[in-house]
Length: 351
Image 1 (spheres, rainbow, N blue to C red):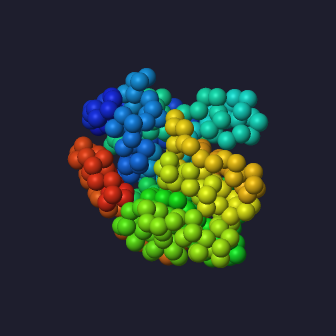
Image 2 (image 1 turned 60 degrees about the vertical axis):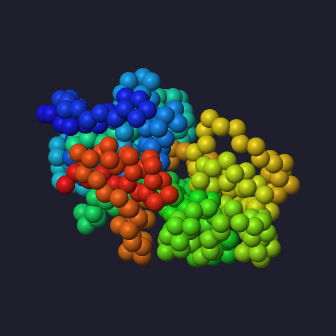
């Protein structure tokens, strides 16, 4: 069976090629793609600013935010059926190495694959994708495919709030740094607890948007004294919870300045490969409790269930700012790369 598939060969070198799909293995499913979101990580790989995408090994197919329809299954597949709407994991653990057997996160897997970032784990930017059953998850039949393509993104923000032993209740003051797709997901997740949600972002358009997606207050970090602003919004004490979703150097460093005593801090935004100057001594004197978030474990089914219960409270479709058919994929990346302030989520469609 032939299919048109996108391959990233290097910075700015994205090619759509017609290839023969391999035969399904017994544990695999064949998925007809319907919607794929362009993530900020995809943009940085395309621009040559991130080493996460491994085109140094060989060209690979991007796309880890996706939803599609199952059109065939391998002989040993039992949990996924032909006709299911599905999405899937991004970080894929082998389940067999020493770290996996010890119950560590998928990011610790000694044989970790990352869908949409490596030649050995092709992503969703193509007419069809083949994926193992264990990484494939059914979504409700009444969901639009574009909502299914938000599940991976949402799982990251949701995990930033509730994963790794995280917890919230209505007494908490939560600060989220960054109002992009991950920050939006974290804000919606946090608001289910009725906590006070404060979001920091320098872009006015993002601040305005997130007020409709869980934020009670928004703050421009470029104006005035950020520490004093946050204190004034938290009764002078600082937040009890911080989730850093921006991956921005200034945002990361500000965490240690604005955190309240005994604040629970989650780092979600990617900054790997950079040294960020910050006053780490405040971790000691403020008794901060810090956790990272990468390669969430067995969280996708919970994310789908969570989204099912809150999706009608928010206009998810409005978060998709641009739509492009697959044959206009180069135009889609052009917008995602060159209009970052307005391209909140660029969605590639196949219908």
